[in-house]
Length: 188
Image 1 (cartoon, rainbow, N blue to C red):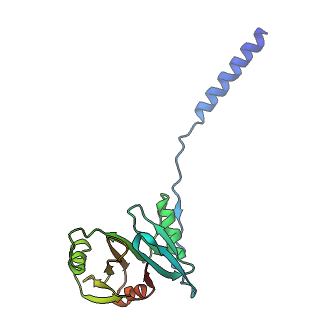
Image 2 (image 1 turned 120 degrees about the horizontal axis):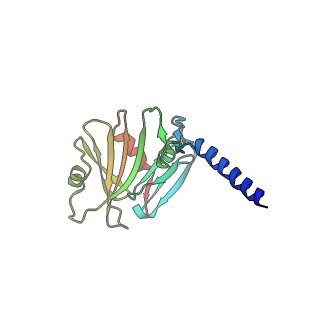
Image 3 (image 1 turned 60 degrees about the vertical axis):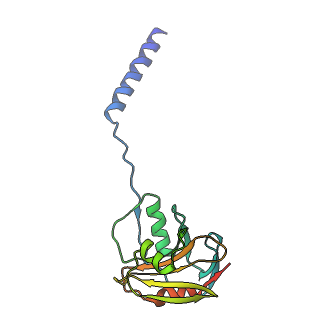
């Protein structure tokens, strides 16, 4: 009995000492986000209901909506959605391509500023601006002087805040890029 106890103790100490020699720190592998590129929009549209913004908007059937922590919603093609989801999980993009985005967010207008003034103060839009009639609701379309951002600002009757729809790209944009989105938007 004594021999077995000593043998077990000796064997255990050999295992522990050999295990301590082969212990390596575990390093978490950061996920690499694979960029599959922009995916073309499907011809079929579906309605995305956004009651928090007081609107419904028709988007390509294969596009996805990504809710952001700040309350905004980003509408992305499948390639950009997969890339954004991977980055949100802590992944890393190894190379980049040009990106574009379409975001819808709310801006508080408790001071009841005119939409153009609000867009200049809160959005930094400093380029051309245009009026747009969104089903009887006045909207302001604003362009940045750089040509990389274009936005639409309007106040739906069912909510207290101003809705801002923005298209951004590392390419040239014009008001037609946001008018296309407004043409697919209905107030709730």
